[in-house]
Structure formats: structure tokens, C-alpha cells
Amino acid sequence: MGRLDGKVAIVTGGAQGQGAGIARAYVAEGARVVIADVAKEQGQALADELGGELGGDAHFISHDVSEEASWAAVVEETQARFGPVSVLANNAGILRFGDIERMGSDEVELLWRVNQLGCFLGMQAVSRTMRRNGGGSIINASSVEGLAGMAGCTAYAATKWAIRGMTKCAAMELGPKGIRVNSVHPGMIDTPMTRAHGGDAAMEFGASRVPLRRVGHPEDVAPLYVFLASDESSYLNGAEIAVDGGVTATHAFGG
Image 1 (tube, rainbow, N blue to C red):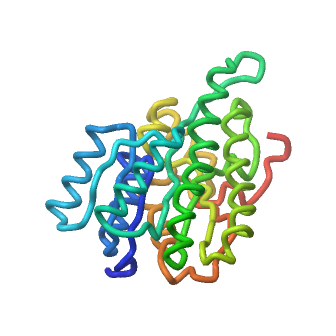
Image 2: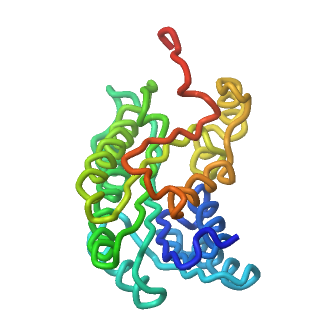
């Protein structure tokens, strides 16, 4: 308890899945949290729960990460309600599978807008206030598909590799301003987003390929976000950290 006392955090994609797990963990550790998401009903319900039953400081804001104006509004409302933003969990993202020969350019562009552009706009929006207020921590959600390839994931992986690269560039650019930027690379995590692509069968198959022989859960990822948001990680900048049960520890001899 109390590892994030005094921190003001924005969690994008915070209404469910990994984002909800991060929001819960942040509130439990004393942060004041804005849950930013396009899923209004789920986001408001989570904010009510965290601010009610758990007695934390949580607020929901409807937010489209791919829109620059939406970012400006979220940062402004967060500061008006809680004070200067000190943590951004750039977690929002979407998953689409598609073969190179068949995937439509509209789906490719949607992945780019939400995953890659959304991440960039988030860093841009919060870096200004963080710089003026002594620094902060930005945590970008990449993926194991940002560390290695997988068939059917070319468009999605492109965005996750981009996030990995943007994180390192931003760490160099923003580090002198007291802003740390790191990327998290989850493996197969049991969330509504991943279950939408195969349900229980996909989870079982995924578990069979993981050295720990299980898929992850939001509770496996959230503690890393707490660490990266806290002062405990004050010398960690530009890092890429896999939370994948060991999937990226080896190679596949051709797949």
C-alpha cells in the first residue's frame, strides 16, 4: 500500500482487461486515477467501484486515443480534478489478425490509428505537463509481437514494433526533462479482447505454447505497471520488459 501516493495517473483503455487491472492496482497503491476509454458504460462502472467500495480516487473520461483533441481534453480534465499528470499508462490498443494478401487497408489503418498514433499522441500530450511539473513516467503497451513475429499479425505487429521504437526514442528525448519512458510486452493475456479471437480454445492452445503452461491474467501484468509508475524504478528508462511466461526466452526453429 502507498507505493503510488501522490501520483496522478491516466490509464487508457482502462475500462476492462489489462487496463482495468492497472487501474485497480494504481488505486490500491494510493494513486488518483483517470480511466480513459471509449467504453463508457464499463469505464464509469469501474470508476464508481474504485471510488466507492474501495474508497479510492478514480474518475472516468470518455476518450478516443486516436484523436488529438480528445487527448488535450483528457489531460485538462485530469489536471483540473486531480492535479498535474505524473503517470501515463498508454495501454489502449486493438487486436486484428489478417493475412498479408487479404487484409484490407482500412483495418491496417485502424490498427495504426489506435495503437501507434494513439501512443504517440499520448506521449506528446502528457510530456508537456510532466516537463513543467518536474517529470513523470510513461509506460507504453507493446506486445511480444513487438519483440518477434507471428504469422497473421503483420499489421498488428507493425504497430507494436513501432511502439517499442518510439519508446526508446522518447526515452532519449524526454529523459533529460525528468520523464522516463518504458515499454511493456505482454504475452497471451486472458482478456475480453484476446478471447474475442477463439475463446476457451485459443486460451488452451496459448497455454500449451507457454513454458509456464498457462496464459497470463491482468493481475500478472498490473504489478509491473505499478513498479514502473513508482519511484522504485527511478533509474529505469528506455527499457523493454516482457511479461509472457517465458515465450520470448527461446526461438521456434522455423515455427
